[in-house]
Length: 255
Ligand code: NAP
Image (tube, rainbow, N blue to C red; front, side):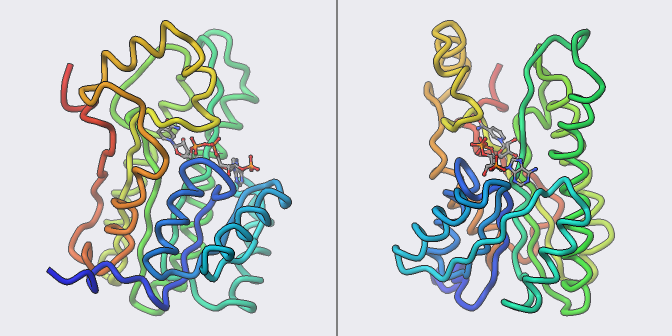
């Protein structure tokens, strides 16, 4: 098989939440496959730093800091991207947050914050980007899911609800947009060593439990998501639609 199937030369990819963590590594791997990267996050300085790091590695990377939970900010950023760069070929909906507490103590504001960022933002950004993809009859949408798209766990009720819904939103996108040659798929990380899981990794009891619970016996690293992201962003996945690929060290397959 030719690696040309995975070549992203000439494609533009917007990766939300790519200033650090999983999104940053996915952006780097898509860039290595040839894509132009639009880096995003709320912290403009962090976005600029990540874009500069990509450029120093030879990539074409530009900064677009905006809050994915803010509809007006999305519209303004996408209009600027359209003017300054052109069409988005690949959208990775990666930005996400976690708030851990017992469900009986979750304030409505916290529930709303998690759902707005992890779920509603995926809808808002994809809705706007898909309009152009439909016109062009081509597009790749990758929604970052989680093992919590399938599994519950105490203290992360809003997050689990949001990630389960992102899985089903991915199928809804497939149902409406596959006819326009848009492939919408999910990528579901297991437990990955990022800022989001720092407290868990520093908790010796959780760390031991996670290593024992994961068939691979370890935490995943952000760079381990890139290969599946390139596959889902490339021609290699042109007949794959509405699926979630879990990159979880086997966690979901074994009890
Ligand atoms: P992270 O290290 O905390 O990074 C999150 C990224 O999203 C940052 O770039 C952050 O930048 C950005 N972000 C957060 N809220 C945003 C908003 N409203 N608008 C724009 N950007 C925003 O998290 P991560 O671990 O890499 O997680 C990335 C994705 O993978 C999330 O969807 C997460 O749920 C999912 N995931 C993670 C794991 C894991 O074990 N780490 C497992 C399964 C799924 P700013 O804060 O500057 O905005």
